[in-house]
Length: 137
Image 1 (spheres, rainbow, N blue to C red):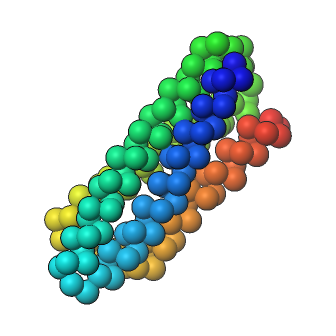
Image 2 (image 1 turned 90 degrees about the vertical axis):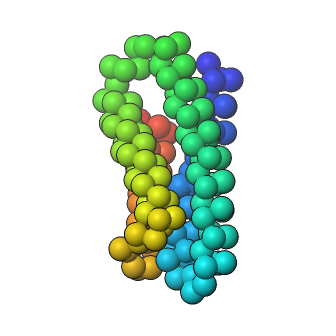
């Protein structure tokens, strides 16, 4: 179980690195004044999205492995709430994918300010998930 937990944490960190940085790239992309700059951000966004998707997939896989190894944990309210928050992060991740497509196609309708606020959302999820996992209220 400790090996599963260790790898779960490693890939959660990888996933969150992308969830924190990708929306910051959106801020810069939306402000890029020239085609070359926008093209550079498209490449960075695509590569980062691939990395964070691998991190998120493996974090979820190791999380599921831990639940499979100790199914009794599903009776704890804190874990069920954590899983709902993880589902919210998956939706946020998918929303990022959609935003990448919009930016790539030149259909950006969002301001830099909106992306700056959007960039804060994963931090709120992280606080709640860590408190649930560590404190287990």
